[in-house]
Image (tube, rainbow, N blue to C red; front, top):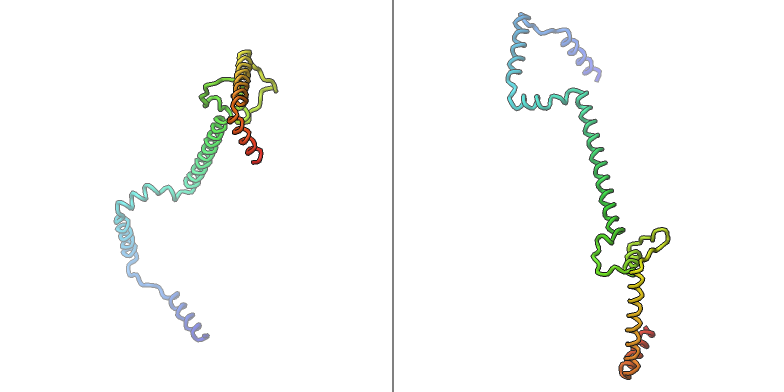
Length: 177
């Protein structure tokens, strides 16, 4: 290997010492400049358009400011999406809490209101229930109607032995189950 290294060093020294012969340096420099101009003029139209549109990427401060603007936009859109989702969740909870707004009911009595409060999980305000006289009157009327129907039913059961026997058998089955 030493012989090869010595040959390599000798060849390298000879190349360093030998210089190319130009003849006329002015003619040579003019020829090089002319070739460079010809090469530059051969740039195609698409390359010029691409250079014009994307030439800004070679400028550092523009590149960094564009990245910063993109990050600001991503953060803004993320914040906006979070805000929209929060409002949608609030709206869906609002529908559950204020079920009265979406429920079309035929009766407006106290029992239906209490049932709504139990189903939706609402609490009565201040622990006090304000009941109007009309609601109390409706409650008393409905209890009276229920008592009258209950008396009539008991009377029918007592006077019909087949019905009495059937009801007793059903009640015994229910107790067993």
